[in-house]
Image (cartoon, rainbow, N blue to C red):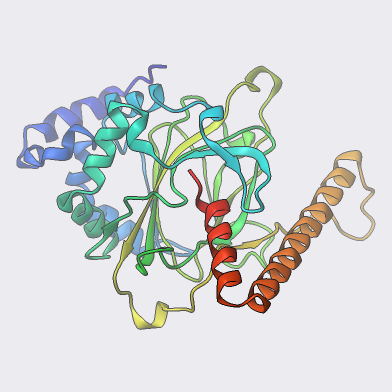
Length: 329
């Protein structure tokens, strides 16, 4: 599906293409304006709240973004198993290079030192490392009814012991409205705050780059597609970057992804409010989510204790199974 590029963007792109910046080889993938404006992008990234991030529209060359959408894998082609091993409304593909020529070009580009340095200039994080395994990343597709609770990400690469530093997400949704949900949300503290500090609509060729720390709480609200758009889904490409070291004050013990269920809306759920059918459904869903999370955590704790009791071989078997469920491709 073709997405037209505004005329003023086209004119500015043509002007930038004639400059020295056009000599950077990967401008065939990136919008040249990203190179031209990286100093102002860095200022926006540094000053953003509740943690450092930047939203960049028209991030990729428009033709290249359309190629990525055309080669985006079917839902059935991906892995729809969640952290608990059950299949749901999210599908991911980590072996992106095999998806087609555009994804092979993407993979070739993001591992290049000059591309990593440009991302480093924007974020102020030097010596970034590309993840050849795309663990947790790659193409993401989410269907109607899917949500992603606020969370902080796992903080070390599972095999390389690198520090996870940045998420770079490019959205590939030619049609998307804010009221449909699926908006990426940033929270100051999801244990206390019922509302996100920032909400960004996942529109086509919009890129969101944000740091990953012990306080970078993010997720997206529930997807509620209207009946005439029920066939759509939320599509994105997620790229994660690492470094071998990080500032000492940011270092924490190794952990997996840490989720927090959404708080209830205090404006609706208050004394004297008469519950509607929708309110009751939301309360049941919230209680069910918490029950499922507790059940999963207790099961995980039991498996860990049993692996410990079984000795070294039991622990190895546990870790291998856990790795397979979380990162299988």
